[in-house]
Length: 196
Image 1 (tube, helix red, strand yellow):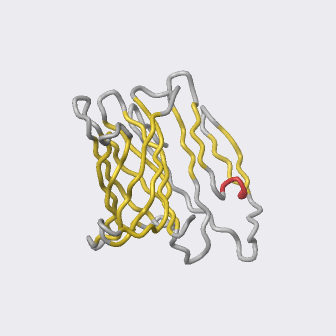
Image 2 (cartoon, helix red, strand yellow):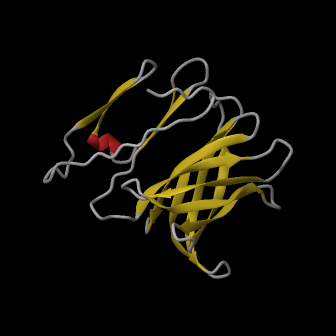
C-alpha cells in the first residue's frame, strides 16, 4: 500500500517474457480504487500515458520500455525538477537507469530561457564511478490544461558524447516534468542510445 499525500510516489516493475514467447502474449492489470486497466504486452512495448484519475487533480503516469536480453541502449531517467519562484533558472538531477532497473549513474543540469527566449535545458550524464559519459541538451515545454497545482510539461532532447566544443550525437532523451506552486517537482523520461 502506498500513500503519496501531496507528493509523488512510484512503482517499478520488470516483466520477463517466457522463453520462445517473442510476441509477449500475456497481459498486465493495473488496479486502484481510482483507476483500473488491463494492458497487453504489445501495448506495454512502448507506453507513455498520463491520466487524470479524479477531480482533485491527482494523476497517474504509466511508462514502459521494451528491451531484449543484454540490451543496454534504452532506459529510464527520474529525479527532481526544481525552480525557485523568484529565479529564471531551474535545476534538475536524478538517476540514469538501465532497462533492467539497475542504476547506471546520474544526470544533472539546469533549465531556463536562452537569449532568444527559448526554453532550453543542458546537463551531464555521469556513470556510477563518477566518470563523465555525455551531455544532454534540448528543449522543454509547458503543457496546457494540466491537472495539478503549479505547472507540468515535456522534455525533448539529445544525448551527446565527446568534447563540448565538438560533440557527437549519441541518442535521444524525452520525458515529462511537473512542479508545484513552490517550484519543487520531478521529471521522468526515457533515454535511448543509437536511436534516430
